Length: 258
Ligand code: DAK
Image (cartoon, rainbow, N blue to C red):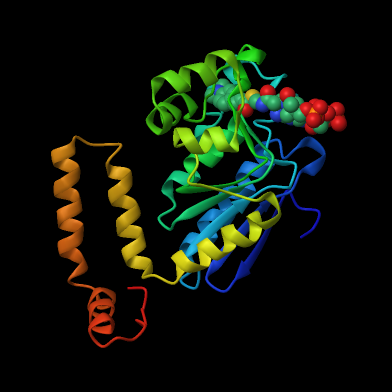
């Protein structure tokens, strides 16, 4: 697997996907996005996996879409082949929690990939940016939509229009990332977080993820109703009863993940 553009591994209930084009700072081409989509889909369908972690190298999570490839494309190429939509959006279909473990650069499509994950753990040396404007382009994998929702219009406009990169501390302050940790312990901390989340009921995690995402897609009253119904539905699951019973019996729950 070492020559592949991604490397997959598993640690107990955690599926790990490592982007592996270090010579081009993990620039994202079709081969990477197809392989990433396939790995995400496979882990999502695997009952023995509870959480998925996506990571890059210590220098770059990903420096964006592959400019060398894009430079040759015409409008009709990208429109006809449905560029981005055809293979960048698989991550949105994943029902299990996905954690981005970001060291180094997360630029352009790399930043958008991280923003598509549910939790971003950043190393202190990480940098986030949407520099597409320098190429005469604009973010096209959800950046202009997810970034303002994450950090507000003022900061999003600044990042998109000026191409300014945020360091990890700024990204943390603005709410772009979930946690910042030392670079040296990033992998360990991201995997420990993933293992801890993966120990919870898989069905509860999926329902919870769906509820939080609904907050961005629906009016408040609809979102609250959706949440209420999802909570009601938990009472039909073995895991909710096991979780509450275990609490009453002062023991650790043994979830069936159903
Ligand atoms: N694509 C291809 N190759 C890249 C790359 C990229 N995004 N980023 C870096 N590389 C390659 C470099 O060309 C270099 O290759 P060699 O010259 O060694 O062969 C190698 O990686 C190492 O990079 P540098 O030598 O440049 O390393 P430095 O440390 O000096 O600089 C850097 C690192 C990240 C600041 C610099 O490489 C850089 O500015 N890279 C480009 C970053 C960028 O602009 N990213 C955004 C890409 S555009 C769309 C939807 C979405 C998008 C577009 C359209 N539609 C729906 C139409 C998304 C666009 C993007 O993501």
